[in-house]
Length: 275
Image 1 (tube, rainbow, N blue to C red):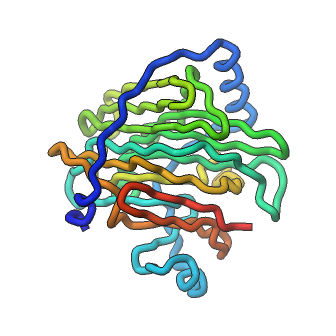
Image 2: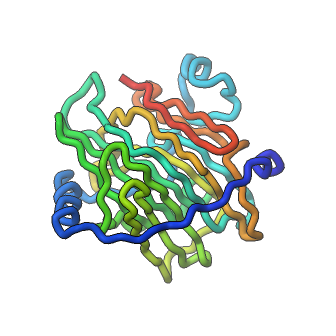
């Protein structure tokens, strides 16, 4: 698998820094508070098994697809400390309420290191998609699990923006999370130190149903489609690796398949297929 991944090599893009207005920062705070709860991106939660019809209909290559209650996307895993940096770029979608439900619904897209085979810590950054009726909002965030998510205040996000997300582990207990809105030129960066130790086993491009702290999984939004392009995982030796050969994950809740994930040499796509 590792040899196949090395066929897809890409370079990281250069970021441009900008600061939004105080009005935009205030709008971001309101967007987060509208949820009325703390929330957290968590390690992958498995399900014991998926119904046979899901396994037959989800993908042509079912042997490389696993199911989860909260993660959809692609994961490159190794059994030794391997990964130093993960990056991806996606167009911010317009979420909708599922056909079968109304009220607040949520989804989040992120890149990260660990959380699959190593579940003790995760370095990650991404964008939340929030919808409630006709109201749609977005929040850029960073997290070093098991801490909660923290908002990036100095960046604005809207539907259709092209966003690049990158995490870098400078050691097993330190690193950075960076988000660049390529449509506006804004970039934000957070530096971590003294954190719970990463394994550096897993590199990830994920759409997640995040956890409402003290409640459980949030109502999952119809996010449409998220395609991570320019998907690169950098190894400790400095090699650039694409997602080809990654294990795919899809979300199943209450016996229903909600996502369909696919991967090629330079991209990871997660499509909402639920109600």
